[in-house]
Image (tube, rainbow, N blue to C red; front, side):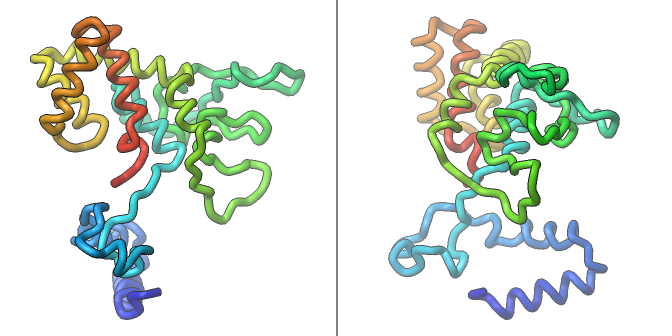
Length: 235
């Protein structure tokens, strides 16, 4: 560790707060360090290329389950208030048929969070596996975090993504408002921040090139939003 005194202080604080993981996480995420930009400061790429001294926030890709839940949240299909209950069968229509193949579940998992999806060792969700869902046949101490072409292809072509882009488009149009209001709302839902002027201009251009503010055009724009790096990476 490069910050030994800080590590000691956090460990002591962890014990003093009753070994509460929630309190520790709250303490970490409310710090100025956690809220720093991921853009290196002047000269920092040379002075601290590995970011050992925490002078910027590292760019982190979300876990597979978080990516799926984020897509459902943006489309408005995520059932946030449904807790507990039986697990949901995974959609495995894309996997080869066999006598051992179980029933295939709905494409959107009934809008349930990914934690409620069934985990069958030989029939895991193809979409989640592409984003490094661990192998269920053996223990995994730490997940891999990869950046491979298959992930971009999944966001472009997976039926689940197309289905949710359609639902997102309908949600945007049902909300009313001007085109700029809708573009701002889409950016808040996708990135948790306001759209820049350049992004508003980009959004207007995309809608125009796709035929105007129709449902099909909005679906295309929402699909593009899901494929932006900021959608699955925390900057």
